[in-house]
Image 1 (cartoon, rainbow, N blue to C red):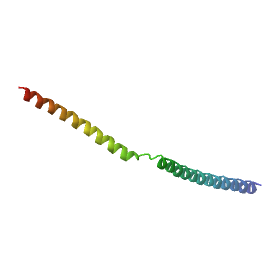
Image 2 (cartoon, rainbow, N blue to C red; image 1 turned 180 degrees about the horizontal axis):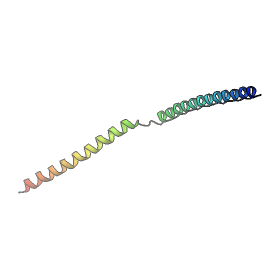
Image 3 (tube, rainbow, N blue to C red; image 1 turned 60 degrees about the vertical axis):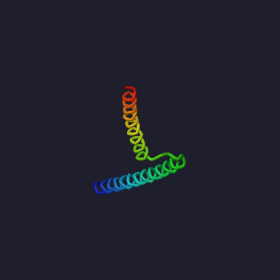
Image 4 (tube, helix red, strand yellow; image 1 turned 120 degrees about the horizontal axis):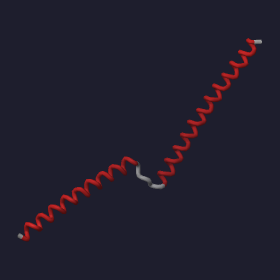
Length: 83
């Protein structure tokens, strides 16, 4: 009886292990499909990749800093020309 019981438990454990593997495969396949769909939607919306956005944001910040420097220089030159 114990050998039959162990065999039954072994079969049940194998079945659960196989089911977990199948569930993991299904999850991975669903994630891949969702990622592909999101990339397709984002592409259709003409969304900018994050790296490109951050690069342009940094360029704009540097340009604004340079504008402030140039404004100060212009004000200094105008003040000198009035003297």
